[in-house]
Image (cartoon, rainbow, N blue to C red; front, side):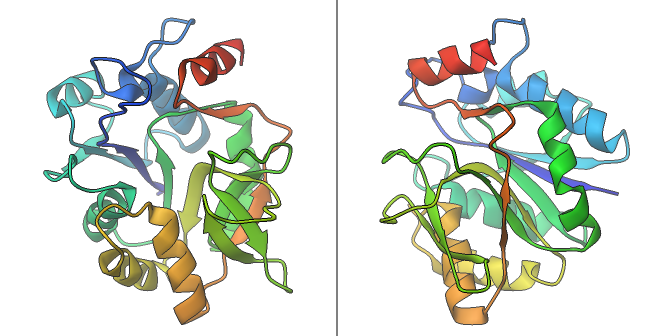
Length: 229
């Protein structure tokens, strides 16, 4: 059984819509969330356990995904960031490794096939795009063995961007939970990953998905790119 978490608790203020950002309609008639759910079911089937972290206008998200997922409520969605939403989800998810993604990612479903080897090997990873390195995005560097070393918006000399889709193995999950609990309320989950790498020696692969379309929708221009995709 594949274990998947979608982080959809945030207010999405940068996009400036009255509804939760994952419910933003795409040109094909689906919402961002619906294309995620359909992509995940297409790749992992009906047995995949999908949980969605909700917060801002949670009833709308729960209604939109009713019957397709379970829900985790981050009641402090307006005071915390993705580190605490992921923490809640990991504490409640069934045993095993967890694939998770931000609730504003629009992506080519074929992208999920690139994870098969790492998932089978129970290897934690961060999906990355090496074709673009924007100041606004989460960037990464690698250590001498080729694993993630730094992972944040503040990285200088980044090799690419993290696209918001990641996996933590069953073995690495307890350490990630510990470090997500330790980071500040307003930290992104990437800070928890970075700290767990530094303190515990966790190894996250960087899986390059640059050849596939993948857009995190923060602004109107991102939505236009997502619609083109």
